[in-house]
Length: 338
Image 1: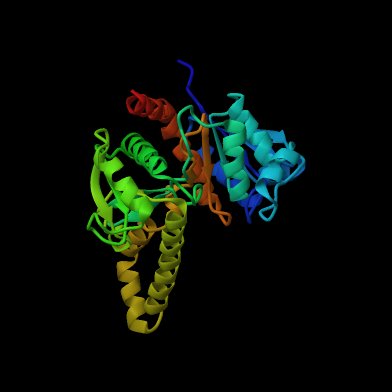
Image 2: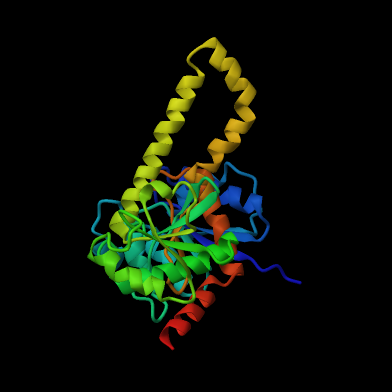
């Protein structure tokens, strides 16, 4: 039987560490799994120079030339429309034309969001595609939806976010009947801004999600809920604070462990357990943020992504395809529309 490959179009020119870390991440992904093919999209000469550093299955890596690069500071709509031969546009067209199953980029967030909607296109019935990263919690992970795509969302958008997030957590992460919570400033229903108060009854009356009520930001790391619903302004603040605190805490722990001979000896003794714990709170381990609700998979990774995050972002595309997430999202929408 012929192997069913997941084909990922990888923006080799996007991000602070392109093309070195991006190409390396692509190679690490195909070396980690034998059911992945990677199409590296960007300036061919630069990509091939990086590929020469590695041993890899040349049947599973190809290069598509794209002569332009969209910079982070460029206006995204204008850049997508004018730079037709940019790595982002060329790679997204591969997804649109069914030559690739997914697109992964560490490049301009704005261009990825705009390109996802204009080129790949929304699933019919989806009002606003949200960005939805996995974030570490005490018990595993939670999906933060939305974290950057829709700053000015409506209540009906948040309802769709909850449904799409539930599909993703159940079928990609494997959490049955995932708990859905709405970000709020208190547990009481009368609390919150106008958007929260309007969204609350929609989620409560939705029979095909497991809605458990409000969640305060301090309860998110405890694993109180599996799907954390909010508009993008709030979600982005939560995500950036999460990452900032994680980075500071990691630095302080290392500083404390290296502060004296006794602590250095203690560090050696606890190193295996500590390494495992710290790894679970490293956001790189969970890949990028999928832009849910599109006709194909678009994944945005951090602008400073290393090869490890790129690799994990590519690997997460396999589950998305195998579990037919888009088809399941469409099923949820049919329930909503009937």
